[in-house]
Amino acid sequence: MIAAANDPFNALGDPYRRQIVELLGTGGRSVRDIADALPISRPAVSRHLRLLKDAGLVIEEPRGTQRIYRLHDEGVAAVRAYLEQVWGDAATRL
Image (cartoon, rainbow, N blue to C red):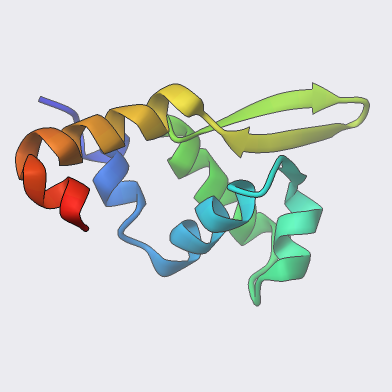
């Protein structure tokens, strides 16, 4: 069983984290870019990114002095596979 802190569904339970995932769906971004797009501070964005990273949904890549965050394909695929397993044909109809 997945620990609560590393559970991607717990990580996606917060509306700001879902917004971050949506932003990263369009490509990699820095903490500053994400914070500029949301009504929360950079430290808050960093905390949300850490939780998303611990849940396997986000990875970071060093680029110069910045860290660029993007969706972790394997983590997103695992969430999708779980939903398809649980909901079966209902998931494909949605």
